[in-house]
Amino acid sequence: MGYLLTSYGLYASDDYDMTWTTPQCILTLRMIGLAFDIYDGHKPVDKLSSDQKTSCIAKVPSFIEMVAYTYFYGGYFVGPQFPMRRYLDHVHGRLMSDSDDRPPQCVQASLVSFKWGVFYSLVVALIVPFYPNSFLFSSDFTDASFLYKIYIVAIWGHIAFVKYCCIFSLFDAVCVMTGMTYNGKDEAGNALWDTCIGAKAWDWEVSLTMKDVIASMNISTNMWAGKYLYKRLKFLGNRYISQLCTMIFLAMWHGWYVGYYITFAFEMAVINFEQQMTYVVNKIPILRKLSESENLKVPMYILRKMWQLEYLGYPLISFTFLRWRHIKVVHGALFYYPYFLFFGWPVIYYAVVLPILKSKERKERKAAKTNMVGGESNGSNGNNHTKED
Image 1: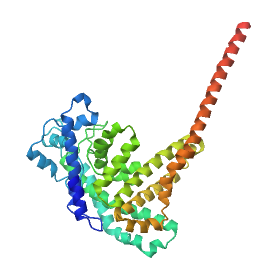
Image 2 (image 1 turned 45 degrees about the vertical axis):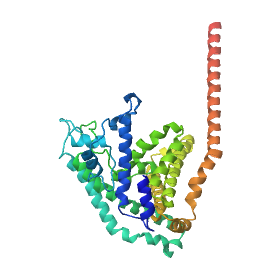
Image 3 (image 1 turned 90 degrees about the horizontal axis):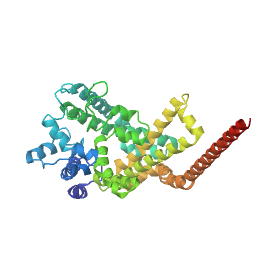
């Protein structure tokens, strides 16, 4: 990690860099994960979590195994991440038993990912030129109406994300074709090929929340972060602190630019906002009724999709332009309103909204308890009258 960060400092330019540091950052996570797995392999089994038991290695890999694992052609350049134990099980034929599906049954699943990759390649080639990054710095954007700028950021952000989904899908096709992504069978007996993949294109397209996006895009890296960072920070005793430390590590892993830190700060803020708003909606009957209404199902989906597009696009501005002098031009054109929304919301939520909801819950519990006691009392009186009669 230190070598990678030093390289970022020495070779960084004023633009989004695609150099040798790109595969190097992939290998950095792979080596960190391997170090943890070997460490876990020398611990007592009863002290390992279920995740650690599936990837721990008791024997240090040989030089040839290290080289093969490090430079595996399906995951060297952009991922996906996978543990050494899975790779060794794959090359030694232990990943699938004799009764399980073997290649070429994985060909169809591989072609699905490949088709998505080709489709997104066409989108990048045909549509991206109409929404270049430079447009966000032009007077056509900065002088436009507020609603138009929101619309452009949403469309631009989705198209920008398509580039990543294109690369992930193409490399997923390679990994699936090798058979290394085998994940057992479903209830119908069909083979699953969805372990250690980078993207689930359709799930991403229909996603409605930031949590859905994380579950469908850059999947293996997110799972790596959860397994090797977030869960190992359990000793901190606070999931928010563990989440914050994980986000800081991932931002640092991407590089020194402030844009990465802004991006991951927004990711964390948007996720917390969505979770808290879900709690609020479920606690207010009229809002819960509207969200569950069949008649409003389509309009609600459209509104939630518009929300997801906008707040996926906004963090990508800082992720793409990296330096604050570039970021502030676009964020300033939008009056920095997401900063006030997502970073101001926790203050309102904990100072105003949550106390009101908790007070309401206490009153409802008290009223329910009073009614219960009153019901028992009436029942007792009724029994007494019956005995007297």
